[in-house]
Image 1 (tube, helix red, strand yellow):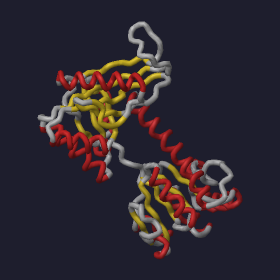
Image 2 (cartoon, helix red, strand yellow):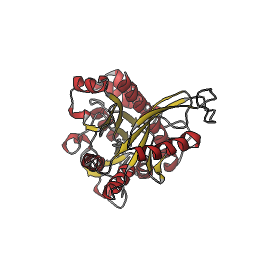
Image 3 (spheres, helix red, strand yellow):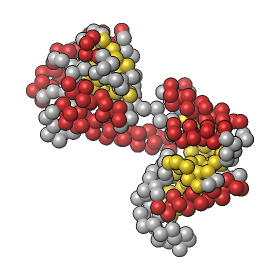
Image 4 (cartoon, one colour):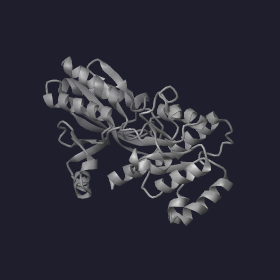
Length: 330
């Protein structure tokens, strides 16, 4: 989305009208799902994709027509053989595409594009609300709205589609050893922001973790003194010793997080869990921990272990995004 809105802002500066094509509904087997977007200018596709093939080509041509007409619309494509509109695709699904006209002379679009880019850069949550009247989308901040306000937006019959801003999930890695050093860059490459936390100053250097959003050297027993754990954080625990792992895990499991994974053997896990129960950690919280961490791919080296962990975190992230999308559509 950042690249799309950067290009939109550039086009607005050049007084170039555009159409933003967004898949707002999909059913069955389709090349791309809801939220996939493509930007089209008078001369054709600029960037992005809504799945390729005939549906994308037809969408591109229709978007070019709508630029000339200065209009917006929603069009349903059936991606299977049918008598109404056979576009030559046999995926077996259907997609609804929103064609949102962007008027270069409407100052509200320039203001919106700038604010979207600012929020993405500042990692502020929010969502674009596209309406059935096709006016300039609203930018709302669900994190500052009470549940009743959010429900009002989602249930508003005038709302056509809600597109969350792509604020990347944060991965907090406790421990800065070989596995963490292998893990951090892979997480960053698949869209996680990383925070590295260790009690050894030399281990959390910029040289070792150049891509980290934050590098913290502090006491494992006093995490809250230097770091606030949030409900949407993905926590990975791989410190230099079992005692530190347990100390960190006990604090983390008293909080709400999106994911907790702990490195170690099953024997170590049993011993740590016994200590956690003795410390009063609820059984439900203990059972929610992913340990031994990572997918079962017989990983041995730090690099292989990192791949297994990232695979598991990608899976959990995808599942949570699907759950959030279902809640929005209810």
